[in-house]
Image (cartoon, rainbow, N blue to C red; front, side, top):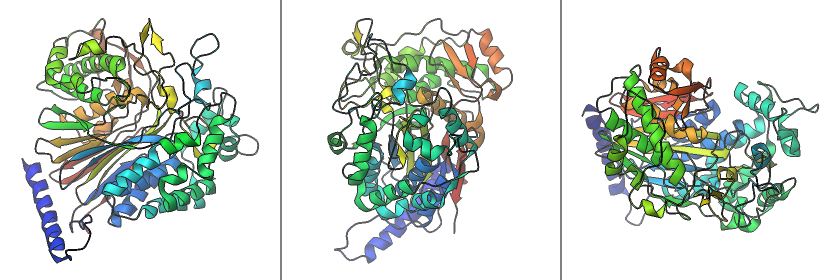
Length: 583
């Protein structure tokens, strides 16, 4: 109640300023976003300090959360190119502080018109080696990030489009120090299992003349990326669909070995989408995330199942709470893996899988005292339409997430990706191209049944990216959160949300708690980060958790509290939280 009253007072003050501004304006003046309330804080959190600085620069200049998110992401594409960039795609969730409406923006890559269901099979009809498939032209989907940004900016930006690219252009020209994480990724990509050296542009950029990877601390400059951003700043998305930048992408994709089919026509046919969010109730909250091809409904399903299994949660050290989370994850993943795909091509039961009655039914399977012996997909409403589907598919691992709340009360949760580390490991015009098509199933049929996530021309591959916005039941902002991490994104976001909202942990502390992903019978977990005794107690109940050291999460979250904004940056990465207070 206290939180609601505080936020309402802030909104009321902002609306008073808006009304005064409107009253003074000539009747013929076009509508524009209202000026910021005089003393309201803003916040951004992302995986690299340079990106946070770019976001704060836009917020300080009076920009919206969309402005800040765009500026931050084009910086991230420069300083952590292994994770995301303009050669890839993403999903953006926007919360409007005045209307309290939530809108999704879909910039997911699409398969070229020349893609085929068997393009990742070898001559014998067997799936290709993943690394060969990744580092190829065949894996490159039509990039959608810049087109999505322009759509979101046209609707919710305040600053001029060109201004958003200034920080990234300056950084690309002046140079930035390679971080330890980026240095490790370059070295790994240049090793025996890597393919980075095979691309001339990548080799020239990331390695010295002797072929040694640049170390941490080396100042890396990318004038070609700066030139690309200048073109985008001046021309908008058309710079990515025709002219020299577009031609360089097509040439990189069509180059052997394992040439792809991307064409200029594919680039020019791409359109981003505005979508309604997928939302579900969770205790006193409303949790909203992306529609398909995202499978973020599985995150909402985990929360709903957990609530049913633990109506009165105890806390991070309680084994019943962890058992409930693992059970909820196992059930939600079984449904997600079986049913979810691009809903333009298949009938994905997106909302049926989070319907209260269906979650009630699935929750009856949960036995907190014992791990499940086997978990099968459930039978949501209309299941007879979906029973023919098989289960298979890869997922994005080279991904980033950022969260922003601006001084207008708007918020953005943005998850962006190039799929695997350095995407397809091919560069064009200063940036890496995605390998998003390896998110499709490599095989079109399993046991004689079609796979929902099979490759088709123009289809979007299934994604686990789950940029999430949580409000209270009155529509007021509570939490902005998301993460990279492939299919584990679903469990990362659900676990962190539980830690923040149910276990009442400070945001920064909650993000650092051990991740456990129960997608398969043997779960993956960060045993050293779990509270003492939890793993032993879960093992006694039959859970098998393989220790993976540190997982690949990059959780970045902002919570609205009665005392203001509280942010967190995943300690497994190199980001930080940036704040603008009352000035």
